[in-house]
Image (cartoon, rainbow, N blue to C red; front, top):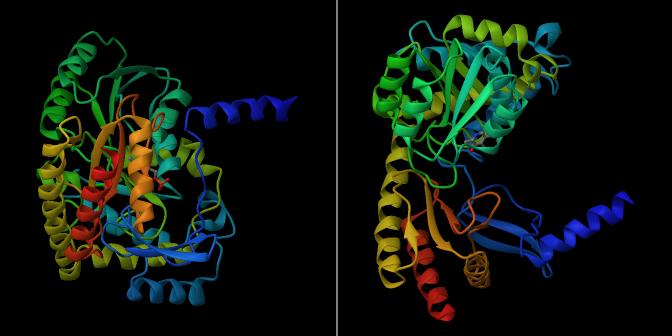
Length: 402
Ligand SMILES: *Cc1c(COP(=O)(O)O)cnc(C)c1O
């Protein structure tokens, strides 16, 4: 019965062209990456990873991982509150706290195993029965799931509609108010209007849970993320940063007022009831964060920014020809080409694949109905020749669709 029940639904996915496929990568994450194919393995020029600074296979981080494993072994052996809380975890937390001190007075940080878990931790530990969560409708799935799990009331506002948010805040009667938002939206690459959000938070005594998965490492002179970009400072910010994207490793952190961090340690089940991150990974994360704020990190951010501008110029020209296609207001590494129709998005992605390029098509439910797109992501490891190859291939693929 169960198998038939699932099989029926899988057939429906097939019929709607919404069935997803796993691809097996046969080489490390890099601009040119090999994937399993009928001929064995096929190298593709990929514009799909979140390895925005090209650190996922950086020699210094590979060394740090080996050194960390030599010194600390492979596993932490227990959860943080038992015996898994080790010196490398603390070193990361101290460095992150230092990063956020200019933006959150007395900032303290806590390390978690993934961004997904950190968002569940935040929303459930802070979103108790006395709270209302105000969520942008385009928030990441982990924040949506977290809001579902929380005891709090949940209000959702249309993407970026801070006028709607303000009305919701005005009529809210719970003592605790938490605005929950992506800092850089993961499918559109646009940046939340943090100065206005902060003004609203101050006016209505709300707090801001900010998911900076795609800003950390990329935005700000030192790569400290979206708060550094806007040069904002307030006790009201509760920042979640992921370590598997620009930082090229794995894991996540929350940085916030010390009382909030203490509460997460006491109450957040996705923090308490899981094995602490392997210490070798924490050791690698430390090396990565140091690299991000170094001169090399700055050079990588500048390289990325140059590629973003080159790509946008080219995409604007293409969207000028095909007027139903849209770009996003994005200056980040995420640059979607929104074509609308699921089938066209798939066909474009397939035509690029045919030319040796990998750009994933994003379809509902990952993006709203009618906004299927190619989600192009850039990395500092890409070259401008590779970006030009993408633009040329896109122009050819467009021609084939006519
Ligand atoms: C990737 C992502 C997460 C989840 O982070 P992981 O560390 O991959 O679990 C959370 N929020 C946003 C906006 C993301 O893009």
